[in-house]
Image (tube, rainbow, N blue to C red):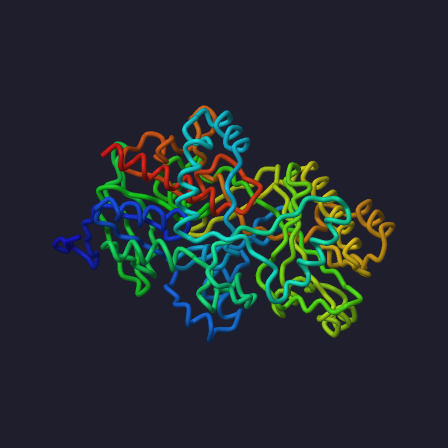
Length: 494
């Protein structure tokens, strides 16, 4: 990298070979693979760089404000409004996720290939990438360990019903079960991009620049000529890359394309989401759900319907958020019984439309149109979750609707399911995908098999935005596998 003579005005000009925008699951892969190939790599990240020791001294609330965009409460407007969370830090959302690493199934990849019109991302191509990711990150099958009594209860309940459950596959080394996965691992056990791919890329010469916001891609005749950015002190920088890799996330990537006049009508027009229902259960015995890691049992009996059920270990902040809006007397009673409570997440794959409705300045306006089938799926998912929790011994279940009373029997559950309306659900999402899908243009695609926006030669997208749809599983393994293939194809072509 060399600095060019400064042009008129306070703009710093930087010439570089490979420029990577974003440092999460996709950007981390691009940075390391390009550096391993001998490319001169610069990585730009809008958020801060946070060391493991900082998680030890920060409260979860401080970490949320620092690591999450909009403090973790980006709104997806519609009926109901969905709270969407994504990270904004070196390492991206891998810093604040559960470290889950699931391999996409061959059936899913075959379906995506048929829908997209591209056949190069089936299991034979991606399996080798996933195996390499698994090796590098040290994937394990997570045991219950110290604590995780809520996971044990869920597993036993699934077995009593004859339902399938599985221990999670996680990328951790020496997990201490500190129960802070979602706000940054204080022990450094979770193998995020910030601790693995990115430091290795730096050892090979890559440069990582935190606190740099990319504003626009300047392009001409299908080539990116410059990338305009602003650092955390408000200074303008213009990068001139030979090749550009965009991995700004399922929201950031389409917003950047739109702001740059690249496929402005199609980028972000649709967004695939996994929806999360949060259900609180009270047990007659002490559960002490604050003790443990993210979860150590996932019920997959209804995965073919896009429904997964798992514990979400309690924290004071998480419990407070889940109880917000409820009757104060109920809240006080439950806070006093916290040791007997468990909080459970039910993930449902959304079928209705969602997308970026507009971009106001630098702020995207997200909207969704939850369909009738989504409402039915949520109702079915909650009914199955309640059945599972009662089988686990719960005496009381609080549905994800603040106005609803506690449910104490299957009869109560059926009555609730009969009267709940779409606007009653309190929904969270932390998985967004497919906002710039890899597909033929006539099939709604934004990028081709090399991740290049259609009509562009030296720009590649390599994050969750390129996935053709929602995988129904935690998507990190799928994102990283796609990114490896995209970067590999680029390196083979140069």
